[in-house]
Image 1: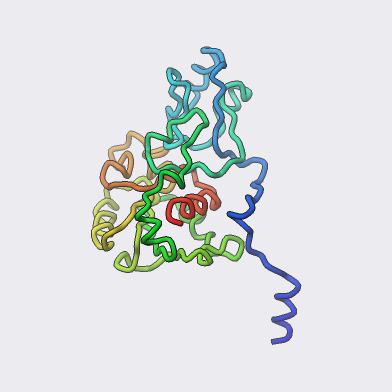
Image 2: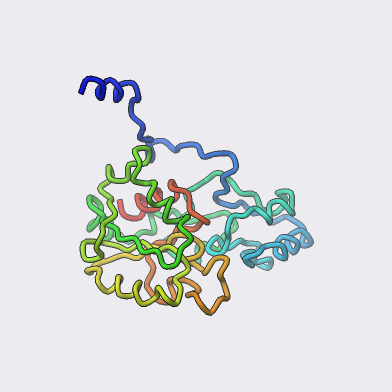
Length: 247
């Protein structure tokens, strides 16, 4: 017992202070994009043609974060003259259309549904559904349970049964073989409930966009309340989205 207490004292508190303090992310992290609308048409077209996801709208001079894999190709080919990815991880939205952006995003807390805050502000139980995901988004959701993030300190937990949950968190491109299971999970979740789309695959199909084996966007089959973009979204992106939307 004394050794345990000694180790705890030496290690100190491992939990970060977010949202009171915004932790720094590693230098190579690509977060919210910034668009230079003064870039030449030639550079914009070059970026649009190079994008593997057709995520760049060259007419509107915007990038669709719901399609974007944050691979950085557009930033590299333009040398940052059109698109620059920042270290800002607070990039989630309550509307799919807001993910098509030039760098400006509406404040998520102001656009969340207030009755969700009233209902789930002190306790939020989540059921995660991996609908043919590659396990990247799933892994970065699981890490929220570690001491550094400590999701449970906010009253948010992942549960085993949809019948015990307030919301379902969907990852993966929703394959044809997983669609029925997902819909059954949604039906088993008691009302009122929320649906959270995590990752580019879930939001738009990701790299599988155009395949007949997947659903191109969770919002085409279920009413999505919260969109968390990324490939995969940073754990802090997930944490920010949950706290801003429900707390």
